[in-house]
Image 1 (cartoon, rainbow, N blue to C red):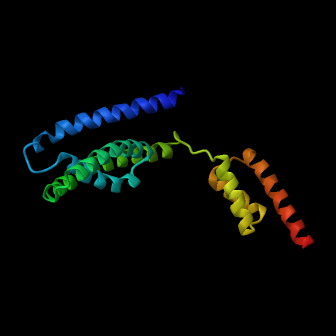
Image 2 (image 1 turned 60 degrees about the vertical axis):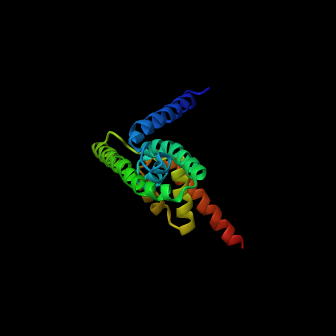
Image 3 (image 1 turned 180 degrees about the vertical axis):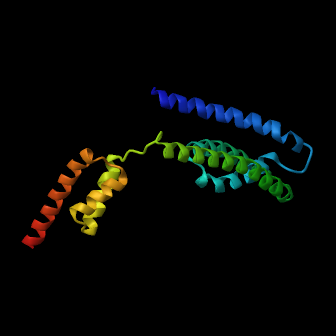
Length: 186
């Protein structure tokens, strides 16, 4: 088994155990009240789902995997109990719980984003253009009918070095020449 898949399984198991222990500790006060802790988890998870697109890649994955367990646990409670009064009393607590989870996640996302921008500004994290990005730029330039200089500027904007852009410029010349031959033969 590959190392990353084994680490993913370990992380998934840790999230499952952590979510169950966390839910049991946090919701111990709801045992005697009219609220269902599964429903509170369910409504809280929906609030956090609204925040997921704003999070960075790593936080998004961790939040999504933990929310799957929260949603499934709450959905099983809702479908089992079918008690509208209990559900209504759980909505408010669920929404406040969702905000209590979402706000620290947003704070962490802002801290990570700021650190990433700072490190990129200092030159520690540089983004190297991939082959797919360069190929997309080539196709976009061909569709727009740009000349060779405009394509070269597009490559420079992507951060491709002069030595690495030379083969792509040759491809662009060949493709524009082939396009001109096809247009001439028609």
